[in-house]
Image (cartoon, rainbow, N blue to C red; front, side, top):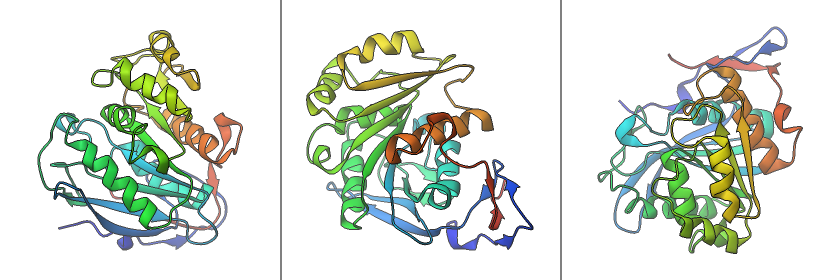
Length: 266
């Protein structure tokens, strides 16, 4: 059965309560479908602020689906739980081709990051057609490869403000893609865990030196999957600071909420 994001049951808190890993804050949530130029249907979810303007839009690109990555990978799930209410940010999550999650399964099959160019384009086109402003790509692991390979070229480049990368392995993305980003002049924020399995901060700084406008931030103690609320929270704060200017980057969003809350299933 496809998960219905409208099924969360909210109750009024008795006062400010700490935001936990499973805390879901109010938002307008809907299941969506993205249509690719090569004929695939990608399933996803859009979470919007309940009221007020949308300050920014995150178009999220998930980790490697052959190693457990999907639209519900925990940092993106927490972004959809929190950022519409805490920061006025819209969060678009979707499964790339052939990827399955509780939301459903996108048609097609994994194509090693090649056919997925159409998936990136479909997601950006959806955000544009919905009138969502201040659009940013947010890639995590494999998703950073997609952002780097396809975010600085048309038809995507003119429709986004920049990109935020979480744990970039730089396996599929080559120096030529970094040079494309350099020529684009668009912002590139790179969050690199101290103990990453593939690319650690010092090496990342060297590789991304090809992009003068790139900001590489090493995160002490973190690992590739950003496990632990401390590190997931740091990522969300950095994202909000980058796309809205709220800050400082380490403390851009509240850690408590005084209002209706729900709890996500385990």
